[in-house]
Image 1 (cartoon, rainbow, N blue to C red):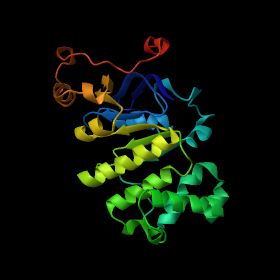
Image 2 (cartoon, helix red, strand yellow; image 1 turned 90 degrees about the horizontal axis):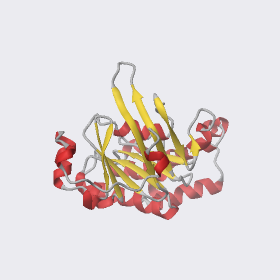
Image 3 (cartoon, rainbow, N blue to C red; image 1 turned 90 degrees about the vertical axis):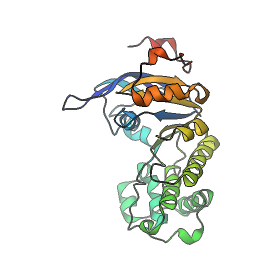
Image 4 (cartoon, rainbow, N blue to C red; image 1 turned 60 degrees about the horizontal axis):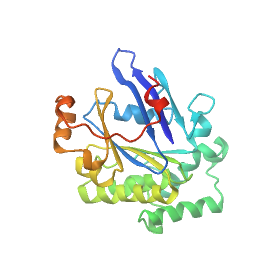
Length: 264
């Protein structure tokens, strides 16, 4: 579903954020990206929706390469859930959820706030599914708690029934119980649609609990690719402390097409 072919990114100051990354994330997989700050996790996610243009390599969604020509069409199939919620605080909850339709409606309709009764009904259903009652619809988003704001963000993300969900540290500012609730909502909504999830996290326990697959990144490189069961405490220490991975038992990475593995 999501395919990275030899992705590299060098920033103007010479910093290399990504180094020849090749990965394939199949449809329906919940893939967690772990790694210390500065490892390249957010940069990799932003390459999927076109917010970051790689210096070399390509990104494909369901076999369609992400290019300037295809970007608008592909963005309708990709949703983003942000660490800091990325809501418009002065707007109502309903308006924020309906903003999830922006990739698929005209600028005039978006500016005028005209949405069909079916679209408004869908926003209400999604809010109900994430645990927010109709009483929240006309509340200002800025008046909600952090957990409630992230629920609004999830409802917004699924307005277009995405095939790919990108979640960039979606629970970084939430307490442990709410964090599990939020990740459960993302996982269940994605499973219902057979959507692929690429989710960056710092919490090891949550990565092991929710991930079907874990990608470990350090210094812009993939240094671990395996199941939660294969992510031993020794591997976690190596990932965050910079120990030599050669001293660890090798993980069994997810199968990768031969042509992808040899492409770089």
